[in-house]
Image (tube, rainbow, N blue to C red; front, side, top):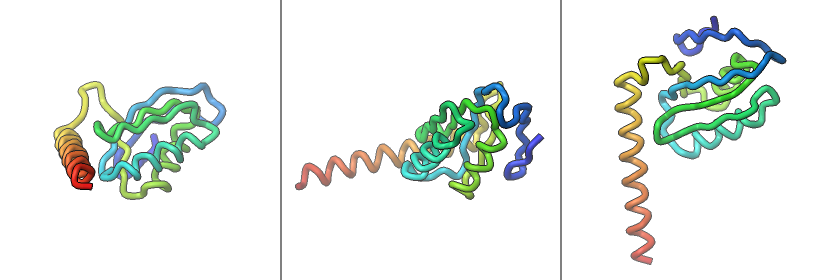
Length: 120
C-alpha cells in the first residue's frame, strides 16, 4: 500500500513491471494550465506509456509499470492536487461538485472570451 495525501492506493507493480492501467480522481486541480503541466510531466516519465488528464471531469488515466513513481511525480508537479483512486462505485459527491464547478468556470471563461473577441 502507498499512502498519498491520507488516501491509500494499492500498488502491486514496481519499476520494470508489466504496465497497468489506473484511473484517479483529481482533487484541488483548479486550472487547465496545471492540468496540462501535470499531463506533460507524467508523460515524460520513462515508466509511463500513456497519461491523460481530463480537466473537465477531474480525472487522470495512466498506464504505467510503476504507479508509485507516477504518484510521486504528480505530487512533485502539483503538490496541492490529491490523486484518489476511482472506485467501482464511481466518483464521490465532493468530486462531482468540484467537477461541475470547474465546468461552469470553463463555460464562463469561454463565453467571456467570446464576448471580448466580438468587442475587438
